[in-house]
Length: 176
Length: 266
Image (cartoon, rainbow over all chains, first blue to last red; front, top):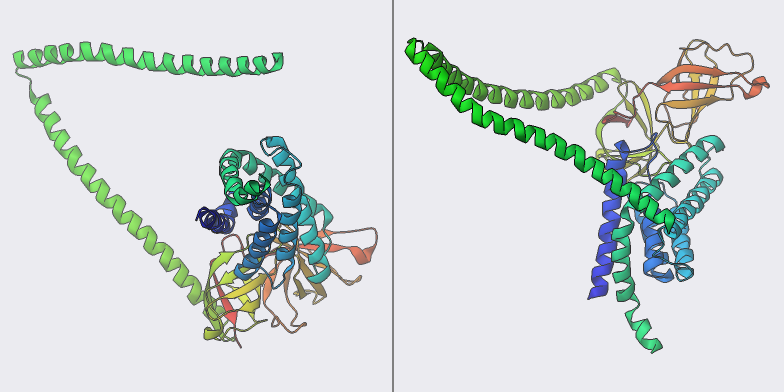
């Protein structure tokens, strides 16, 4: 029952993020650059729920994004899924209570995601190589994502710890 | 430890300073209020007595009248404000309808379907919009989308009620174009992160470029019909190698305020 609630919350979070990205951040942006809260969401899922959940949600979020607004490509789904899996794999290698750790992970995740998407766009969608413009977007996006993480961190940490307990309750019992 | 207590000290100092400033302001106004509360009734009574003595109470009568008039005017003002709000709504609706009408008139040679933009891209690396027309309105993939001032993009996918349009601002879009005065052919590409400009490339070496020249679709490529306005040359960027020179074109359409478009169906 609690698990269903956790999964419902993740789905609600996706739609809230989608609405924010499509409306609010169209005017609340820095030099026209929006944050990428989908990446932040997948990283948090990886950190607090685990690699399998993050991979599944990452893929689903990527597919939903493509269905709602993106071009017919599964690149978003694959990269978000892999990112979630990678974060989930190393979730116990660092302290989640340390805000700086989370900020570094969010910044790294944003870099990996955006660079991968850009490279795939160059290869498959005929996007021209515009390194300076891309670096400008990337640096602003990293800054934006990190600032939003600082603001959201206390709420996410509280919710995340509860989620962690719910998702991993059975596994913990098994060890004893 | 010292650094921590130092930071705490600074924060406490700032808080104390803010509290002092707030309290000082509050005390002054409270003191002023207190004095006024004590003095004003006395002053009013004295003035009333003085007016009575001199049979000069017209002031109070006119004061009552002024109060009544003030109340009437306030009500009137509220009604007018409400009317103004309604007018603003009607004006906005009218502007959208006029935009539709102008669009259809301007591109009378084409068979078109009007549409509203219902969603904008959530990513920084692409520029796609969603419009409220689909297959049931006769919209198909690769159809050209225009606005009142020029080219918007083309349909990349369609569902029954909606269609996704890749705008010319998308870094993956290439538009075969002509410079309207010199009739030289160039290719326009979207610039990452730019909402107002395009990059014009593959300019013939002997082409004469003038800032302000208009750029329109060439009709080559099979998607965009010929002669649709795209924008004006804003900058000409000369490079060491003349074949690498490029132009920056300011789009005719203001994509930041774009609300209505037309899909060219024939």
